[in-house]
Amino acid sequence: MGASISNLSIYTSLNYIGGVFQQPLSSSFFQVENPASGEVLAQVEMMDPCHHESVVQHAHQAFQEWSQKSASDRSEFLYRLYQKLLDHKDEFATLISSEQGKSVIEAKGEVQYAANFFQWYAEEARRIYGDTIPGPSSKDKIMVLRSPVGVCAAITPWNFPLAMIARKLAPALAAGCSMILKPSELTPLSALALAKVFDSLDAPKGLFQVINGDPQTIGEFFCTHPQIRKITFTGSTEVGKLLMKQSSSTVKNISLELGGNAPFLVFEDADLDAAVEGAMQSKFRNTGQTCVCSNRFLVHDSVLGAFVKKMMKAMDTLRTGSGLDEQHEICPLINHEGLEKVKRLVTQAIDQGAVLHKGGQPLSMRNGYAPTLLTGIKSSMDIFKEEIFGPVVAITTFRQDQEALELANDTHYGLAAYCYTQSLSRSWYMAENLEYGMVGINKGIISDVASPFGGVKQSGLGREGSKYGLDEYVEKKTISIRTL
Ligand code: SIN
Image (cartoon, rainbow, N blue to C red; front, side, top):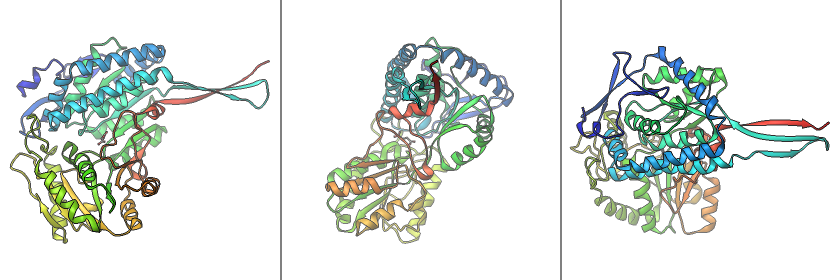
């Protein structure tokens, strides 16, 4: 058992149901491991499906109570949650780094990112405005109310074990909804720690619940339960499609943040130093394990040599090792499967003619892979088509703008794209024609609480964060009145 993390005041391994941290009711558990060391951090109970129904009933009761609170009460609660996260920033960062593997510096950034969602939606909670619309006659008045969707279920990923919950929970609470969460089985402890902090505030029992168990069973239960009105998921496109299919039986309101295959375009007029800085941020954040990490570098033929030289120099500064040591930027991948995927994609690319300039092999640290740079990537290679989720810069060259655009759009995904050019007209042209939900022009980090996050094509449905994120948790109700 991870001695250091079990001493944290926010630590628990117990499911959180109806406002109670539930002592295990079954003998079925799964292990949470530190990806860097393999140390077992906790044993978490796989909740028996026979208890799922009671979770929905708690959520439903809490929804009845919470949705009747005033906007300012909800806002105040969210502010308090924001403050609580910041009060425990270092503890959360240690927990995130321990179970997810990311650098503790990035983990602190994640806690701030998560807290910002509670602050943002504390503000938005007061601004859930409706509309009045002129009716067909002078006696007819039409109004539109924005009312909470109801009981929501969330399924969240391991790569941001706290922030991806906050990005869903904060707008749900602001709108007046309750939420049942199933976090990734790889990183449940950050979610349970959030529940611990949540529990210290005075909220209706069951407003936020965290359950762990078999992902398929819980997913299907969420999708098919008629009292759960919404499902929100961040994770793979494959699982997103399954949830969408299963949700059709109850015509559920659904938001999906799915996979990406982000192109990073470097034109001949790019400021190469800025491009390298952006590439380093966008590629190596969380050791390459974000859905918005640059996956395919598309570099103009005339600047390839200069770009590669500068990238190699920048990559030389990356320090590898356990995330719990503040000095490290490149940390272990989440698990053996993640490592095997990166190995397969790189090996296959080299076998098919790609040129290896740097890295290209696992590190001696558990689940570690060396920062890698490849050129000569072709659109037929798997590394061009699949999300790498690792520290690999895979470069393809182009000669014409149209060719770059076609290569960039040659994917089923459409989450994030990046483009470096000093031409205003080229920036506009690319921004308008890249088939992506988010386009960064001359910047490598586009995620921000104020900025709508989400994709097109098979990267998902809906937007999170920003003022638009609230729309996912409200229904528009029409009231049509005739004055007599
Ligand atoms: C993700 O990888 O799904 C989220 C990344 C972010 O919010 O920047």
